[in-house]
Length: 187
Ligand SMILES: CC(C)(COP(=O)(O)OP(=O)(O)OC[C@H]1O[C@@H](n2cnc3c(N)ncnc32)[C@H](O)[C@@H]1OP(=O)(O)O)[C@@H](O)C(=O)NCCC(=O)NCCS
Image (cartoon, rainbow, N blue to C red; front, side, top):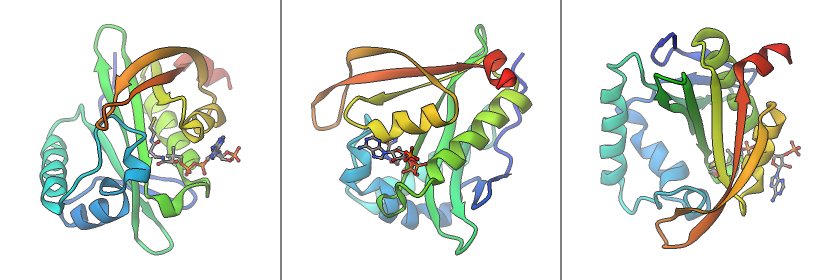
């Protein structure tokens, strides 16, 4: 059975993974949600106005009432800046599988933060929540995302053509990755 624990604060070497709060909305808008360079890699496009982000943050914050909601902001220990977000979602009660998603502000890419956050959330998912399998998919034109999956031990299981159609109306092929709890615990 999945052991739902809500969104507890987690720590990595350089990051605090914590619940986001309404006061984070401006940072979230400025650092990633308004930035095409970040959002072009996801299904939903960039936000055009801060009010859109405020609504999204309100939705996330209200979901924290549920123990089955796992959504962390990534806060840099060195200066308290909120640089990204990571979540576990699509929990399936039958298979006990879920998916992981993440995104970070452009200025913080390629500094190892994504790998650090993913490693910690995967560890939490398998060891504390007892998830059976964690999966993720990335657009094939976004190899950095696949690289961080590989670095935490996820394996590519295939490529699905035109798996998504993004906000700019472009179809994207996606590489699908997964990791079983039993394989993770042997690593
Ligand atoms: C995906 C993302 C979270 C990665 O975070 P990050 O902090 O930059 O990742 P890291 O620095 O830990 O690792 C990035 C790795 O990708 C590699 N990489 C970067 N650009 C690459 C490219 N064009 N081709 C191949 N590898 C690439 C880096 O070299 C690094 O690997 P290495 O440590 O072996 O050198 C970040 O790029 C991001 O937010 N992208 C936009 C949103 C997004 O794509 N979300 C995921 C949707 S599936």
